[in-house]
Amino acid sequence: KKTKPVSGITVSMPEDFLPMTDDDIAARFPSNRKPLAAFTAPNAKTEFVINMANNLWGNRLIVLKDIYKASVMNLFQKVTFLQDTIITRGKRNYIVLEFISEQENKMASHPVPVA
Image 1 (tube, rainbow, N blue to C red):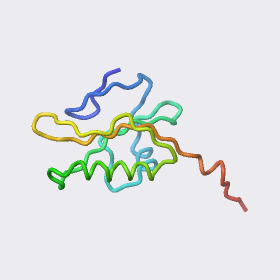
Image 2: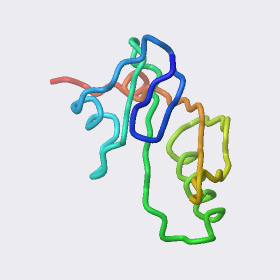
Image 3: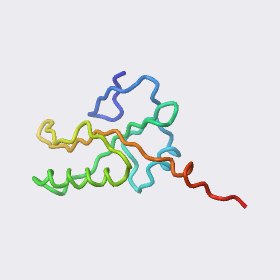
Image 4: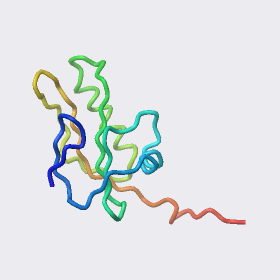
């Protein structure tokens, strides 16, 4: 379904995706900057998150895009990029990184002993 998570952004996502609670966001994205919007599938294995940062890089967005891309690749064990581009909307340029990531469940492979 098409949804408008924040002003100026319209996206299509599965109908069963639900907005994350503030507690879910805090647990999954520990940062001092909360995402603009965050949704999750009912099984909590798939997330859709929108984030925005101010650009202090001017015309060097290609360098910033590559830094962001490298950061994403370091966060997950497997990353497949669907989009890795800079787009122009109106008079503004935006970095778009759309990706699918996978991460091993570390709790399952390294259980902590309980006394």
